[in-house]
Every structure is written in C-alpha cells, then in structure tokens.
Length: 183
Image (tube, rainbow, N blue to C red; front, side):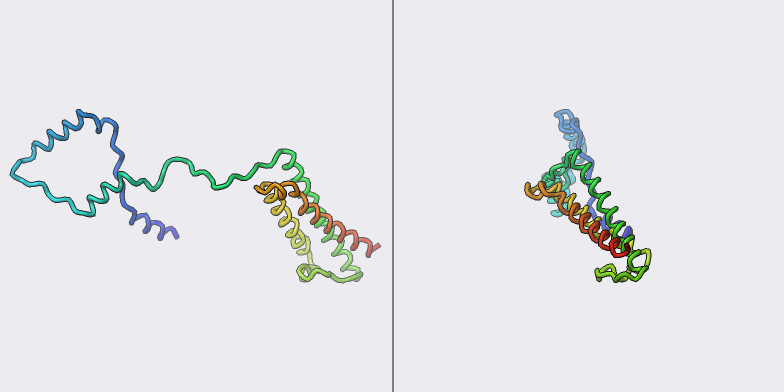
C-alpha cells in the first residue's frame, strides 16, 4: 500500500514556490527587463511548448487544494452534560443487566432448568463466552442511543434514551425469569 502511494506521488506535478510581493514591484520588473535585454538580439526567442504554456496559465488560476477549513455539510447538535451523564448511566445499567442475564442463564442451564431460547446465543450458552456474547446487544443500543441523541431530527433527539432503557429492561426481565427458575 505504501509502495502504491509512493508511485502515485511520483506522478503528481511539481509546483513552484509562490512569488513574493517584491517580485511584483516595479523595481523587480525593471530588473527582469534589464536582464532580458542582456540577451543578444541575434537570437530569436524560443517557442514555448503548448503544454507548458497551458500549465503555467492554469496553475495560476486553479488551486485545487485550498488552505481554508472545510465546513461540514450538516452540523450535528452536541449533547448537553446532563445527557452525557445519563447516556453513561444507561450504558452501565444496560451492560450490567446483560451480565446478570448471562449469569442467570448459565446458572439455569447448569441446573438443567431449561434451554437457551435465543438461537443467536445458543452456541455460547454452555460456556463462559456467553458473557461476551450478551454484551453485543447493549453495545448496539448504546450506539443507536448516541446517534439519536446527536440527530438533527428533533423527535429522535427527544427519545434518544429509549433504545438503552428498552435493552436494559429486556435483559433484566430475562435475568429475573432465569433466576426465578432456579429458586
């Protein structure tokens, strides 16, 4: 990948340094005129290649990369400090509820009180990998909640907390159901 980037950079045209303000002054113009007058009059001016002439004129007029900052097409609203604290709180609650669900599921399965009804978690049900597998859903809900919190749509911004709270509620409910089986 680095080699292909180096080859691409070799094909870029080299640009000249920009002229200073002194080069545009009348004194500099006289100095250039006096230097050009030192050339013997017997030699005619060499013609300029067409590609060089167009490159000179176009490089002055067109500047593809500007130094100014690029403004994003759409600005996302920033969450308030209260929303940030609530988001982190809901994140902790959601992941804790998922861990409780995984613990109660392992306990119920080890006591032969039932089977894992979620087909996506069934391969992990009889190992400690269920703890990691159950953390995927709260992570997705955290992402969705964060995107809703910073959405430009006002209705989504009002209900940004719903995915996290719903996910935590389902995990806690499943954990309590499993816990009730073992008691």
